[in-house]
Image (cartoon, rainbow, N blue to C red; front, side, top):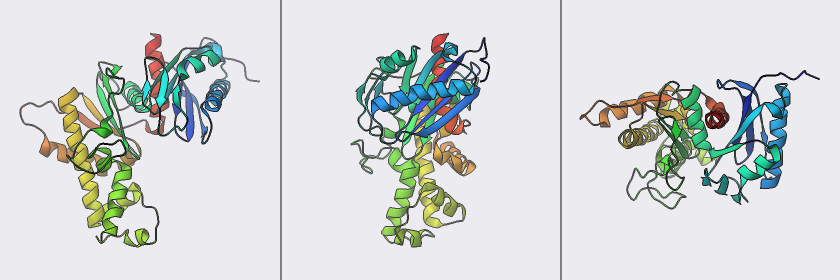
Length: 325
């Protein structure tokens, strides 16, 4: 058996997803000591919370620590949720999670402070703390995946808003009477600039008769994702290039709106779509430079996320460290 390390404190960061549970033991400098991830698909809230307890103990054992070394546990979860009361109100990605008092229940099981926040907020705080926004006071992040998430950090603090639902950036309306969104609105950013939207729009255009290198795959009923669209766009496919460029334009418009709303030092592009790298960043910044106002030079730096899939667990742990000061 490994000898326990003394005089070491850690925060545990947990990223609660619809199908996977990720966790990490993180020191006060933001360095991951141990991490773990596994599937929780189909488990009830009670079963998942029991799994969280086991996850914490595994992370600690792997780092030769025990619960006495834990200053707290941060949980990033899909919303809507209440940061103030520590409850998950309801989540489309977590069936059966309705008004679950996760902070109190998990805190009772672990006998340690629990911080609950939106998963995109946790990712935003991770990038702010030790990622793309390190050393800054303000940051806004777009997480570009199946949908578009967001997080806003102002003066070093997560912005929650009066109704605790701030920074739903994917539901900013960028096209009046535009494409319908599952949220009930029309013209939401995530219907134009998410990875899911890019793929859907290409498939829809092909089915309408527009030619593309992906036409055969669509005709055979194969699934098309944004990564394939990017590959074809880079190769010069006109349809894929047009829809990718339109997505970048909508993101640029959103960045400019963020500039006027919050005036942050930095806007970070994260999530799976950010894997396109400069093919995303260069187009977004080019559109921003053409669309921006000319009254004042207050454009934030637009950059790619740096922490990858660890942003959520690092940020959740960082929120614990912030609260423990």
